[in-house]
Length: 343
Ligand code: KG4
Ligand code: ZN
Image (tube, rainbow, N blue to C red):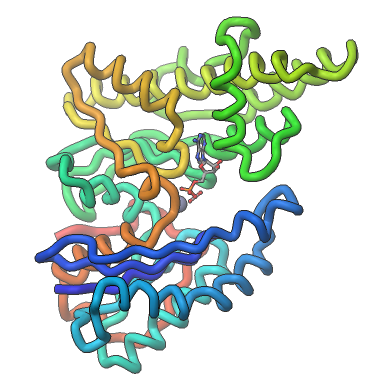
């Protein structure tokens, strides 16, 4: 079964082709980073317009590089949510339009389900059940994954997402958009242990997160230091290193706790922040002590991509082949993961 996947939930336009027999056949991506950079964040209207411009050529490219024609396909999967509504509508209308034109089922895919299944695209893939740490720009979740569609949310952020904490921290340190990778780059040049930041919620029981206090702590620290004069590159690097370390300690501490309370031995890390090297190194070190294993999608599949949508669409279509005959266009900016059901 071959499925075309379309992703347009935020600022990445992506298309990919997945085959249950041969695996991933192609994946193409256009990043809108340069469009949004002058504004310091994603401008929803510009995102929608860019998706309109780029999506159809990307789909052509994905099909051509997979050497697949529409009549080879079993379905068209598209991200139906959560995300920016205008951006979602572009992928949804194109996906449903193509599916109707080609006489195929259109499969609406949950973006976060796709993130948490992305590790299954790799050769070294986790068996069910596992714990997933989903850390993106909009979400920070710990999920118990018993199987496809069998998800229990164990903890989530009460305010900012981990990616947001990276992005807002980067802004405070005067770094350009997109902030997360920039802050990580600066942190790599700094020394950990020069500045003290809180490890939010680590001391309280449970698996929820909170990052807004940490961001405020950085804002106050930057303000105090700037009162004495402009911040040197070395000082900013030290601040970045300690700020990143506070986020990483929190994510690692809660992940280890989630494994311990559930008794599971496998952790999957997904979402954009999963690309963070300090997080990866610390998780690997901590989990090797407990005998648990950590799995990641390759870096390009941690951030938004079409491959995870094509893959998830394939799994969903295989589960309920008759369920996707409708021509309804689904775009759900808010769509709780717990609403999904499994076999
Ligand atoms: O999953 P994703 O690509 O998009 C969403 O669905 O949100 O995640 C994007 C988030 C952004 O906040 C970005 O700053 C963060 O992931 N990010 C990183 C790194 N790469 C991306 N944060 C820290 N370190 C990184 N290397
Ligand atoms: Zn995402």
